[in-house]
Length: 590
Image (cartoon, rainbow, N blue to C red):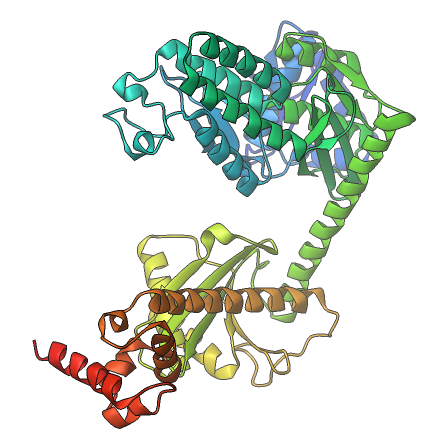
């Protein structure tokens, strides 16, 4: 329970957490101290150490405090409150809710899930992770390796059990004890302790062989070989007994990028990067300290050694806290030479590159806002293109870019029914279908729409938006020949400098929309080639089928063709042309 006061006078001389608020009752800062009275009193002196503190106290109105038994408890509470309340003036992990976690559920027969929400349901979590695609691949690999259940309800053997991807606990084909062994191995696998997993599997394989359960032994053997393959793909760092996290950052006045290398059993098994905000006028070692507290406050495996860039003011307190979570000793190391120092430098260089990339993207978005006279920063851009051959087999594509990066999970593809050749009509259908659905589903609209083309394509987009009462969404056209940008407010196009990062971003989106549309178009045509109604006609083999589709573009045009037109196709003779002609006339009359 928290207690509210207006100043430091009535604060107790005890450890705890203080929560500062402004006139709107918004939380602007969360801090902790071994003495609430002394720490908060320091904010009310006439002169402040930093501009950040001066500005913060200019907004201060009231504060709440929570007493804890120890400073360690205050540290834990502070980290959790910063994560939950996201105060304006705290150094904090940026958008940490967007990162995925691995979840081993708390059930009689647990499952593995990917989630972005952590709850107190007794489940075991690993993370956060920054590469969602890599995590999906890992989960898919682990599920197939250990054959654990994937279904929400255990209501009978499913397809996975029939194709040997699940041990089918729903049909009592595996005991809870045997299933738990699999979960224990998965837990170790996600910690990166591959050698330990293989040792346990080796023991199980020996027991199975001794009991003449040769089929089971063979399955375990395959599991061991699969894990060996994973280990061979990792980079060797030290000897096989080493478990470490290496943490380093790149810092500037407005942002810090932190990189974490995970070393398990002597191998670098992963690299994650995180942005920290609220770093203005904050010492680099304090940013590092804030990151460590928030990073390890999340459910995750903590190794025996954490190698860091700088010494921390609260090193002993943080060390004790981490040791409590790990239930074993944790060593914080600041190296000055040797392999560990090289790893910290490598992590720092990675952080430099990532931070500069993030800044470059942000600058390109700022330039777009300025050049295109946009009402807000275009963090979410959707790009559109259509693809067809002489109006046949028309398709449309929509790609999504968030903060300058492609978001492939949001890509959409469409089979268009607008008869061609009519590029404007196809674009109209594509945009109408996209935004009618988004409006109906009350989805999030983009900050900017980009269509591939010039003024004509842009006018189509504007007409669609007007008809759907979505005029507030900005739209532009990017014409390829001269890279001209058409915007509604101007008759003449905008031409950005050839080296403009803003132009590069628009080109990437336009080209990606084109690539996605063309790829889909080819896929559909390939399916048409693989199997079509033409295969049923006597005398039409694979070569004639390809020649027919090349000449007529699609099956519908073949159906409507005259005998004379069919005879124009390469490799065609009168007999087969008659077969094709009569086949479609006969079937159309039935």
